[in-house]
Image (cartoon, rainbow, N blue to C red):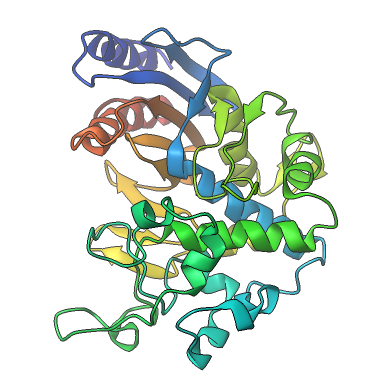
Length: 330
């Protein structure tokens, strides 16, 4: 353990130098014990951080608790069952086959791609209208020109396209089946058992919690979410989330590129030749686990829409945190 402070102190100095711009916190825990915790740029232990799309992974966790509770039969359930088909524009019977799993894996057949400014489903277009659920269901069926890999040509039989509105639809499903409001369900079923009390939802124009991004939480509480997964769903002796759901969630379901795969709203990547699963958000925000090292990490930033944002936090992970914990394990 003697080598950890030196390497992480070097990381601390580099962050303080401003190299990584607006980093706001770094919290590192190994085997459930915090080994490093620092706050930057005016933030402290009580600050809530808007980690943007890291929220999506929490939404996937709530789908898991619904399945565990028997309130939702399965993630294989057709998502359209929870919506009025008669109100859908561009209705196509193929939309009936879209499952909750398709939304969890960002691989539905609708033309929705936040990474393509020309996509009809780009989230910036969603924000201009009132009903974000309808925005998703009104989208046309996706086309696959010759230069785009088709699902049947892919390793897992799916084609990835990053789609925030699909995760908003998951939030509506949670709200409909949880027997209470989705915010109360999230608090009763996930946050309260983890002793998470200080958080703030964003809301859609129709008053639904924004399950696609923007949930504000303290770094220590974000750490609890990922530690729950490392603990195989247990917290303080109680099974909060089933091992089965965790196994499904963090196993690959779709390929993104040569170095990245995707589970149920979890990113699957390697840092310094070490496998991890992570929540990720605009600005380089990361909440991640490296199971082989028993490692849980939270890195928050406000480098929103900064082209270097994710490379900054990737470097923090690969250059400092992973080597430090690997040395500690020896």
